[in-house]
Length: 282
Picture (cartoon, rainbow, N blue to C red):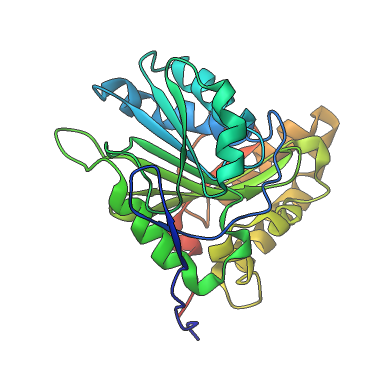
């Protein structure tokens, strides 16, 4: 059964762009290098799009109580797109004020929420650990708002990218959904492999759209079940290390699931699957 959608809260406050702020304050938990896995994937898969953009703009939405993730995002994006700029957007004014001393060429901080208070349509919006406190029924509206702010497709470009997901406090386990202007595209599971007993350990980091769907009968539950089985069957490869075991397990998964990446990403402790294969039923 599909949950009834609930409206997103609108603040009486105005964003840096002068529009009403959409959203609520999050806990703000953050740590240096927490989003390295997500950033590494963005650079590898979206770097060419960023280079093609005349003025590539990325938004770090809900960066939290400290600006580390925005600072790191700028550094990582500029490794593949030297002209990239980053705007850190936070709904809590005190966090914006605390971040201002970290502004530099290519990096600024703005007060706002899901309305994304920037004049230019971003090439990238990263929203990590932002939707955990929201209702599942609100996810579709958030996604639609954010996708509507992305740079459009056209001229050989697929358009901007929204990356929305969840990770643990030190970034060992992470699951995210990648969306374009047209909507969701893929789901990526990423982990420090030495921290996993089995792939389904990542279930606790599923993004809001999927975490309540990890129950029998739902596709994401079936995927994680099959992943655990492939992991168990790949146990002989453990003598060569967790990475080789992961690669073998993912290779076996490709027989039944639409895995869209290859060994170069699997070696990083990642696997990316088409969204349609894991999308919630009903």
